[in-house]
Structures are given as structure tokens and as C-alpha cells.
Length: 351
Image (cartoon, rainbow, N blue to C red; front, side):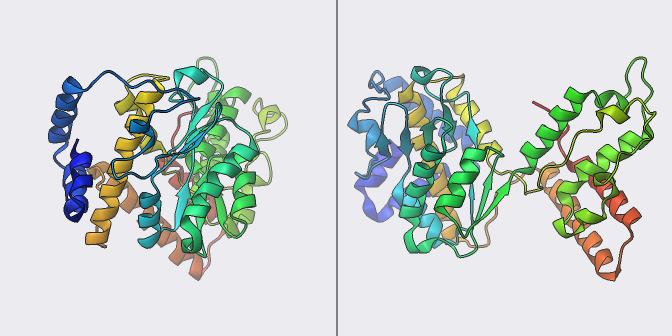
């Protein structure tokens, strides 16, 4: 409703969108949504084969559904992408989730964050990233970073479409993969207290050194002794389990908060396609609002909870301090100690 009115009043469109989605009046936004829901007509039918115009086209007449096939949809707002490019876009963050794809697809597909509903083939990811590249056009930054999970199909598609970009894996997913492997191999009992098994300080220190690699420059990986040899002698009970290995380190993930917001708005797994499109359009409005705010105030930064701000400051301080020490020269022992200390900032979950 708000965006429909904004579309009619072109001169104040940006102001209305920014005011409606601006941080702070969340209770007002919720009240508006509830009121609109009461007066809404029944859901327009939408399926993987057919999407009605009121969902397919945005209020300003531009397309939101750019590709419509039985197994692949691509959704985006061209003006949002172009606005991001004009405001200094420097990274693309991509991730898939397997609980928000429409009921019609059941478990055969996934919602590939913001971009669309798809399966896991390289060709599908290539289509998605080519749409983005076509919309960005000459505005593709020369030093573009693309942050992905460790899905090989997505990585190969990015290399094909953005050959000069730097693709980086997500440290959140990397830590989860390490934790799953740790638990599957039975190493957890040597790191955490377990009934009948004594905790091994050698294994514990080795594990936290591995976790702390997330915050260590790649040029120093060769100095980390935990990557070179088992931390215990052959006769130790944990020695046969030393098969973890370390995948290539990448950077932190930014897509998970988006999934959390989807979870709140969709209120359940596998929504109807109509519900999914309406939620994605609403989130597109939020993205436009953030971009408008950035356009009006280039110094604006995303609001973070106090504990998250403090965590970021601590991480930045520790990394900066270590970098200063590195310039003066550090020993392998100091590198190991730094990794062990920084492991406290890495998630312990393995889900």
C-alpha cells in the first residue's frame, strides 16, 4: 500500500520508501502490515508455471520476476541493483537455504538468497549470476569480491561469469564443516569433558589453533604447526582420528541475517509461492530504503546490537595488534597463541 502510493507520487517516492522502512519504527511497520492483511483480498494463485501480474510486476511497472520456468525462477528489482552499483558495490554475498522454497518444489530445490528458486546445477547458478552481471553492466567493480558457501556448483559458476572477481568462501560455513567433521571423527571428547574420557590439552590446543585460522592472514598459514603434524604421539587414543585436514580459508558470511529475517516473515517452512514472492518484494523495499539512507548519508552504517559492536571492535583490535607485531617479527609460538586466542570468536555449532 505504501509503495503503491509512492509509485503514484514519483517526486516523493524515495522519501516515502525510506520513511516506511527506516530503522526504529518497527512497531509501526508491523501495525501497517496487520491492517493491510485484514483488508487484503484472498491470495492470488501463483505457481512455478504461472505468476499473476500483481506479483510479477512491481508497483512502478518494472519486472520483479525475470525468469519463469517450472524448476527455476529469478526474482530481482533492476533499480535496486543499479542503485547498489552507483553507491559503490564491492561484494556479492550468495548462499542457499533449503526450507523456504515453495511447497510445490518440496525438497527438490532451494531458495538461493534473494536471487531465486533453483536446483544445484552449475548452469542454474550461471544463469543467476549472469542476470546480475547483465544488470550491473559497466558498473561491475574491478576488484569485486563474491562471498559464497562451499558449494562447488556456485563457485564454478562465479568463475565462469566473473572470471576476474575474487571468490571467497564463508568462514561461518567453514567453521560448521570443521565442527561436523570433528564430531564425526570423535575428536570432540578429547576437547570437551566427556564421561570416561580425559580431556587432552594437546588436542584442545591444536583444535583451537585450527579454529583461529579464520583470523590469520593466509601468508602465515605455513607457520602454523597445527597444520603440519598431529599434536599427539602415535600411541595416543586421538592419533588415529587426526584426519581433519584444513580447507582453504576464506572470509566471513553476511547472508545468514537475511535468512533469519526470512524465517521471521515467512513463519514456517515451505511457504506458498505467493507468500514467498510477497516477502521477497517487501525485503526488496527494505534494501531500497537502506540504499536511499546510504545515498543521503554516506557515513551511515548498519545498526548492530551492542554486544555485536563490541565483538567487532575486539576482533579488529586483536587483528590490528597482531599485524603490528608481525611487522616487527613474530615466532611460530606467537602465531599459534594468536590462533588459539582468536578461536573464541568462532561459532561452535555444527548444524
